[in-house]
Structure formats: structure tokens, C-alpha cells
Length: 355
Image (cartoon, rainbow, N blue to C red; front, side, top):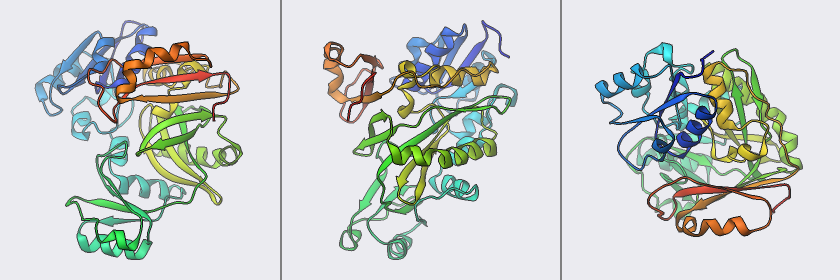
């Protein structure tokens, strides 16, 4: 159990690291962040922040020497970076990143544990792409196997005619068939060092342009009927990875049951509502887990909750939200540039349903 005054290291400098750092400070810990140069908004909540490349051996050594435990805030931290951290400082092994960073690996991993992914095929050439489209059909979506998030690195193939206009991008990809679904939902769990697992309620998630726009509770009867099966898979994934901390799996709710979409070995955008809406937020429970503290309760505190992302220039007028009805709780991330498609903050409303 990590005593007060110890130092938690966070790899990554974005808003998730910022909110994790706030939770760590609340529990009496110091926080040291690490990330390459950029708009590292997490630095404002850290006791110290090291700005260096992911492969800077000397900087990583200094970072590790300053920490009592190390975690990450997003899944694209290079595995080699995490592997450079002494194993004794890592409550969660790099294996979680290895699986999550490759869409082919994560779908195979989930399927091996009994999950049902969308039909998919590996694509390493133009011929592979043509064969995948022929075998799986259209509509479908071509995604880079690695990197890419919030709709980036993705190309929709709506019809056989349109398929001819989609060029192989020159990197390993995955082609997925579209899934007919009622809504999307996420299962967010926290797993402690002792293997104890707790779940938050699952939200129904709405996307715009490949990016999460809203998460709402209650999620609806269909999601509620499928959450149990989805949680079983999520727990198996966490155990199979030896995971410690908050882990997220995303699903499509279909008439035939939950279809696995992807996983994120970290706190998640669709769990931001837990700050105001749950007994213990995902951020605090992640810190509790990696520090070896008892996990907090995950019970939902209100009958209805909506979390909405604030994107781009909408952040410039976000304070006006505070005058609106619905008990709004505003979180702005302090990002310098409010460019189109960039998550700048979120607002959570509690106590009433917004549909």
C-alpha cells in the first residue's frame, strides 16, 4: 500500500492524465508527469513534469527514479517506453498496451476469451483489401491496425462501387464488416492489485464523426439486458492481462447480444460522468488500484446522467453552460488551441434524463 507523500508517475500529458493527477493529489500523493513536447495540460496538476521524447533513455531513467509507481493515461504510449521502466514500479504489465495498440491483436484476444467481435480481416496489400471486401461485404470500414483514434485512420466503404475508390494506405490495416446495432455502450471496470473487480454502470454512447459526443444513463433496456455478458468478457480480459487499474471495453448492443468493438487499458471518456455521478470516480479508483488502496464504491448516485463532450471552439463559450438548467458540472481541460475536432472539455448533468 503506497503511503501518503509517495510519488505517482504518469506517462502522457493529456486531459486524462490531468484528471488522474487531481485524484492523486486528493489522496495525498505527489505526481510526476512525462511526455514529449506539446500541449501537455496534465502538467498544471503535477508536482513536476518531464518533457522528453518517448525514447530518451536518460530522461526515462530520471523519471523512474523520481517515482514510487508508474501508470499511463492513454494506450498509445510506446511499449518500449513502458518496458524501460523498472518492473517493480509497474502495477500493470506492458502486455495490456501490446494487445490494445493493435486492433487485430485485441479482437483475437477478446475472441479467444469468448467475446464476439465484428467480422474482420487483416489487410496488408491492395489485394488483401479487395479480398476482405469480397469476403465480408459492404458496408464496412477500413482502419489502420495501429494508432488512430476518434475517427482518425479510418475509411468507410459503403458499397461495392465505393470500394474501388478506397486505396490501401500502405500500412497494416483491418477491414471490419458493419454491425447492425441499436446503440453502443461501454463497460468500465477497476481491478485492484488483489484481483478484486468493480464495475460502474454502463452508459449508452453516441458518436459524431467517429468521436464520442454523449454518454447517458439509464442506457436503456437492451443495454441493461446485455451488460452482464459484456461484464463477464471484460473481467476475463482484465484477468488475462494481469491488469491493475481502470479498463474499458466498448460494445455494440445488437439483437443477438453484445458485439465487442475495442478496448482501452485506461480511464475512458465515457466514464467522465463518474466524477459527479458515482460514489467514486474512475480517476480516483484508478489511483487507488495502482497504489494498492481499497477500491471505492462504484454505485451511481443519480437516477439519470448525461455527459457531453465540448469540442473545438465551443469551449470559448462554455461558461454559458453554467447558467443552463440540469445541474451542469463543467470541466475544461486548459488546452491552448480550440481547433476543430479537438476535445476541449466536457459537461455532466445529473438528476434528469436528456435524450
